[in-house]
Length: 186
Image (cartoon, rainbow, N blue to C red; front, side, top):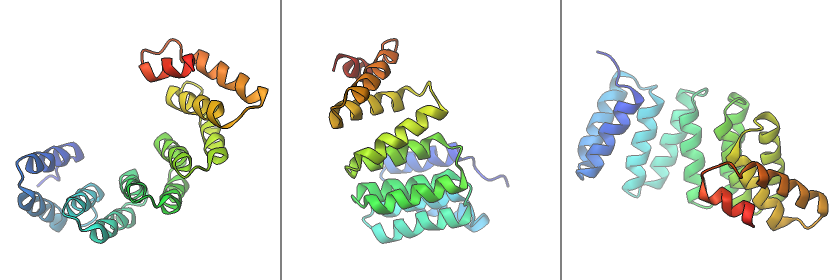
């Protein structure tokens, strides 16, 4: 039999959740994992079920297992980092994302998660550096431009930083996203 795609698994487990049938979600995921114990998506979904049941330690272990099973797949790192951020364990989240970046330095979302987590931790200078580094690699990344402009405006008062924020904000002018227009107005 063919393993279900990640999207199909996500949809099915989501449907079980909406129908309040977590037991069926668990049975389905156990069946998938019996056939393929290395299926990182199924392991992460199992962690999500565990988390929804209040079993935070089991969920954390599942997310770690997903990383161990598929160290090049981003799903385990993202799930574990999100878990740590939700627990306000920012240093742990940063460590997880950095190990994901070591495996897959090309993944933009890792750099965004890292910058965002640094910002939540109130390590603004490191967040500014990370957003700037991301923009150096991807000059058209409007989310990074918006976040960097906001941080520069909120955290710095020197004229070079304010000019940089202004030039970033101008690049957001063409966007249809209301939050970006707010940054420009600010």
